[in-house]
Image 1 (cartoon, rainbow, N blue to C red):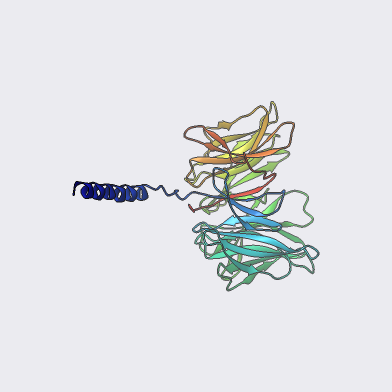
Image 2: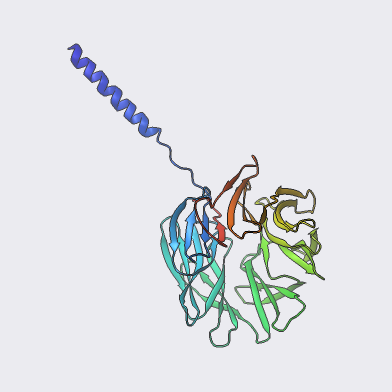
Length: 351
């Protein structure tokens, strides 16, 4: 009888401990993952912030991956015909790996941009017959594709993104024969296709965190400055002037109060990563390496980490690093992976 009770007790302990082990099994927390398109292959991969390759998203020559602001969907273009330079536009849910073809007509499709609610994508397509660009909008399920505008013969459209005003896009235009570097920004209503002139501006690359304030490089007489355009009143103000030394990449903190950017200093001309408040105060150097050029910083959506590119001088091997702003710890994203001059995009939601 004692032997039976002992065996029964051992069995209960085994069942209990096994259940405990199962309940204590750790599940990895969702993370902001990174879409990376290495120039060495052209394929599109998904990485976690520790540099581990999760999966391939698309093969071939891929261009300009862009994340939805509200989901795990990623938009990108793939070259499908080298002779005619045809690129097709896709959207993939990286969780389910479900891929949807959005546009496969002739032409080079590029610069896809999700609307703030993730329901639409705006993109350019270069017309095959006369090389003029058409601006399209399409629902993310592939329905209701339409042309919003076509370039005039004497104009060049180079930027599009969504603003804080519902159903309105910000577009940049300049004359094709322009030699001044000055273009014009317009507000485009996607419902009635009307355009409203906003302001002259010296750049075609702008970034926003809220759709209202736009960060850009201001260039004037050889000088390089970081500036902010406010769409509420079309005002422009310079927050940092780097003189004749270059600037390389910039990114908003999610709270909209802080900006990181790469800059070349006046002594060594090495590019380092700096942080500055949006009012131009509190300039701080975050990353400075005597043997490296550091540039193209990107905030993670949690605002706690920065991803940046670096290459050793005089060598041109590129690596990508993540800086933890709280601890100052720097980890090498590409310690076991060769990305080359990759195009990187951090997911806007945890996956």
